Each structure stands twice: as structure tokens, then as C-alpha cells.
Length: 570
Image (cartoon, rainbow, N blue to C red):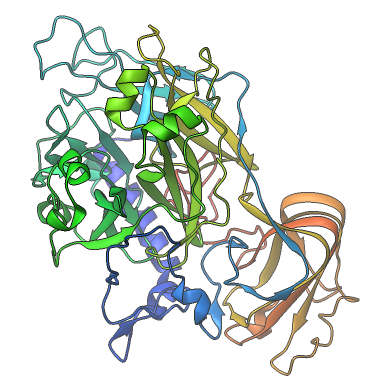
């Protein structure tokens, strides 16, 4: 066990190394005619976050960085994923979206992750989970503390340590309601490594408060508080822009239903003080009209709502009784490699009054989206990322699926995703709220499949060694120069290809040409030749061991404790 001074020095060293490695990223963040240029070359508009009118009909978000790509795209940070067309100039391969596989031993714990958090703490060597546990008996109303904590050595099997806050339980504090616990791996103050933003009052809405902790168990005093804000408002950190973001529940569309608004700030305490309700209670908005309750507020930008690919409840009886679905019930996000990974609670209905009449939980299902600038998210797939079992009254995941903050965690060649869910019917007894696990191949959100070629847009890099994540009968890579021709010595014929292989980290070489160092900071293209396979990602690493310098989501065993994919000293 490290002492506090030792831990302080360790954290300071970790963060210093992470910041030093990301200096090339920071160098790209500057002012170009008053505009910020991000790590990937995207130039943000002068007005940021952008201001869009509140929509009255469902439509997808715009993607300005696809319409006007950087030239070249900078790929120094992270594995480069094919979740959209950002990296692609031309291809005849098919984009395929993949879904998580549910663990056969689900649920992994009785208790609901409702954002809350599941992280791997590399310094402690443990998986840690925060969740809504059972209400404590013999407590007065408003003091039914139930924000609880569990640990695991492998991510599958969880145990509940007895904590001193309420002896005999694993409860961490006396807050009843929603919470987001964020493990800030780049925080230099050990006492603030864990950050909690939690709903302070029981009921429909209330203030959100900020607390810090060194271990995620013992929480300090309230450091900042929001104004009154509606439930299912959550927060996350975007390390690409170095901003804390509050994802706020609001209303949009006609008739009005759930949507999201956005506030960002580099200081989490200042962010909380800026956040407040911009609409009256949701039920009043629905009963009356959206225009009467949406307040024009310079602190808050409207963000997004359900689009025209979202679907209504699978049960037509419920759909007819719940005219306001589909909607976005909640939205969480995290940095993964070179993108922001967005996780949606896709709301199918019904509304609360209908739910109680039918004695049936709301149907929320988990969907994914991806962003290159942290604001505009692309959703290539609107089917559930983790299947619900609606209609099965015995299933743990029949309704109200909600993701945990910290998803995705990296465990070897897999990603772990934790999701809370309800049984279908209200009042079915013990274990109605539980949390399950879904797994996916590392980088496995989207692949480019088939037999054919893929040519990237112009890219630049400062690394040396070329890696791919792929499964194929054969995969060869060619370097294309600024003249549009293959570079001598780096052609398809020179390539030491992946053959009859499957690897989440395979190094590509070209005979004796094992390094791309002479092409650093020059615009080039890569051309992939794929035969009967799937291509998930590529990247250029400074190290022969293949670390990407991207962000590692919720972390994982054997990864660098900074939250950045860097070499780990053994």
C-alpha cells in the first residue's frame, strides 16, 4: 500500500508523463484566425459550443467535420476507428456495426447502475462499481441512503465490502438518488481523484452536488452545487478539449419529449455553479407547449434529441398509449482511443402514468454514437447495442436499460460494458434492479468488411510503427505519397501482410522497411487491401510495442494508470 506522499509523487509523475506525451496534441491546439484546432486537425467554429435551434421534428445531428475534413487529418492520438467516413476517401468495403455479447452469468450484481460508475483503478488493481443498492430499513424519509459500492478482481465476480458509513452495509453516503462517479486519472491531487456529481434531493428534480474522494468510498464535503435541475442529467470529461460537460435533460420536438442540452467548462466546480433548470417541470411542458417553457439561456446550448431512425415501443398497445416516444432518456460519454464514445438510453416509452397503469417498466435500450469534436455525434446503428429481453417477465434485462459511467473498460482483447436494468413488471420482488455485463472485441464497434480496398484521406503522424486491428484471410497495406502513387519500398508487394490471422494489435512492415519515421509530419494516404476479412482500426505508434497514446476509457488491468495508452514499466 502506497503512503499518501508516495501516492502524490506517483500521480504527479504519471500526469507529467501523460502531458509530455500529449504535447504534440497540445501543439495542435491553438488559435487559427481565432479558432481552436483540435488534436485531429478539426478546426472549431468561433462560436463554441455551436448554437442550433430547438427542433420540432426528429433529425440526425449534422457532422461538420465530415462535410469539411481537415487536410491532412492528424492521427497522432489513439487508434483510428472506422465508425464514420472521417478517415475514408474511398472504399468498396461494407461498414458493419457490432453488438456486445451478454455474459452468460448475468446479472453480475443485484443493484442498478444508473450512470453511477464502473472503473478499473490501475493504482489499486481493482474493478470498482457504484450503484443504487437496496433502500436501508428503519431510515426516515429522505435519509434512506442507498448509493452503494462493490469491488471485483476480474470484472465478472463482484463482492460488497462492509463500509463504516452505515455499519453492516456497503453504502458510501447518505445521498438518495442519481450519481455519476468519475475516476479522473489525470488529477494531480490524490484527494480529488474520484469526483461525484449526485442528485441531492429525492424526487422529480433537485440540485446536483460535487464531492471529492481519494478512494471513491470516503467522500469529502460538498464543494459546489447546481441550481434545480431535472433528473437523468449527468456529467463527463472530454480530455480532447479539456472540458467537463453536463448533459442536461430538456424537452424538444412536437409534441415535446425528452432531449439533451449541453454546458461545458474547464473547471468542474464552476461548471456546477452554471448549471440550472432551463425548463419548468417536464410534465408541465408536455401538458402545455414547448415554447412556453424553453428559456433562451446563453449558459446552455441545445444539443440533440431522437432522430428519424429511432423507433417506438415494440408493443403497439404501449405505443398507442405513449405518444411522446421515441426519445433520448439519457446520454453518457467517455474518451476511447481517438474518439468520444457516446452511450444513449434510447427511450421507447411509456410515460410514467401509462407505466403505472400497465404495471410495466419503461423500455430504454442502449445505443452508441461517436464524435470527433465532442459535440456532434454520429449514430451508424439504431438497433440496441446490448439486447433487451422485453416480454420475458423473468429476465433481468427486460426493461429500463441504463449504462454505467466508465464504459468501455479494456480487459485484454475485449471491452467490458456494464448496464443496469429492470425486470419487466413492477413489484416482482427481490432483485428487480440489477446490473449485467456485455463484452465486445477491443475497438470492435464497427468494422470494414469483405474483400476489396480502402483508401484513407490524407493523414499525418509523428510515430514510427504501423499497427492494425483486423481479422482476415489476408490484409496488406500500401503507403500512397502526395503524388497519388505507391511509395517505393512500401507497396502492397513489399508488405509483410496479415495472413489467416486475427489480432487486435498486429504490426505491419514492408520487408526491411520496418519504420515510417521518414514520413513523419508529411501528408500521406494508406491503402488497405483486404481479402475475406474485417478491418477495425489502424494507428502509428512511437513504440514497437504498439501503444497508441489514445484514451483507455474506464481503464483495465495492465494499462497505464494515466488513462492514456502508454508503455507500462514492468
